[in-house]
Length: 139
Image (cartoon, rainbow, N blue to C red):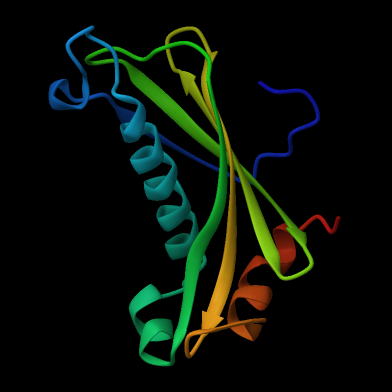
């Protein structure tokens, strides 16, 4: 595991054959799907409903991604997707690390910055602030 990373959530997944490219490794774009799925499962575990908040005009959107590909995953690999969270101003920064389950080798790292749009305008969300408060590290 990465040094000094306080993971707050993890989930296990498995590489499916159609996610691999001609070289037999996971296509780069699929790692983004894995991280998004992890964020969504984490947020749902907090009882936050994307659809209900969307109906109120509150939408989290990705503003930035910094990606590092380390060791490729291959077909049928089981992996563990872990995340950490911090807040910087109005930005939520999710640090994602994907490890191959068989040997805990780091395969992928991403820092994904989310911001909240309220009725289409950048803003603070009381709902997300409250849901994330127990996990936040202020920068």
